[in-house]
Length: 202
Image (tube, rainbow, N blue to C red; front, side, top):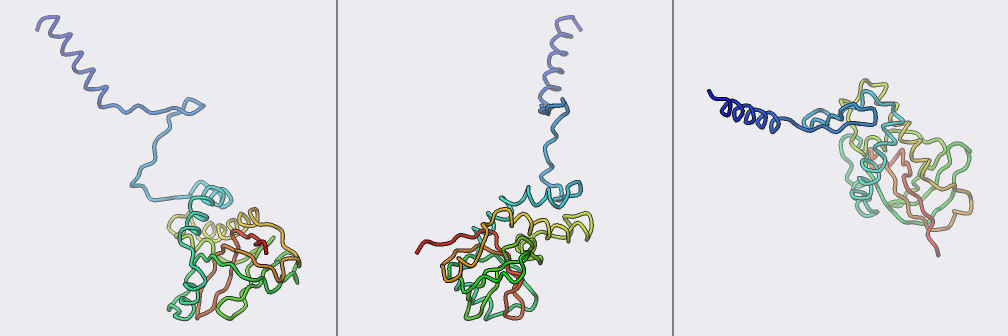
């Protein structure tokens, strides 16, 4: 093979190698940024519950809540036709605040009448239950173990408090719009946990 033929062959081989390669961006430390495998199982193995709560709050919690929240009528339907097992859902409603339950300074609640029954909605600073986590569809198999899965509920509840206004007795008798997560069981709503809360002007 003549020299010009060798040159052409080498050029062709180099071109094939280049087209087969994928250019990978580097981070600020010069390490390659490997794109996520779209077929990989979602995992939070290397994150704390607090990091997961902060990272997922907007895309997985608030957007899901705003796009899929039940209104008052849909919630009433769900309560009147209960499912066999508990179900956590997002709800958005506007109603009169019957009273503010401040019997515990750490666990304050707004009480609003829903479907003819008073519903206490937790506003913090301490909120309990798994309603936010379960309404958002987090699954146990996304987590390292049961402890991390359980701790996420507390982290999400703490994250919710960061986005809520302080409430006091001045809210009583006023209309408010609240976006919240709650668990429906046996025709009753429990563990109602506020995500967004706004007092409406008269």
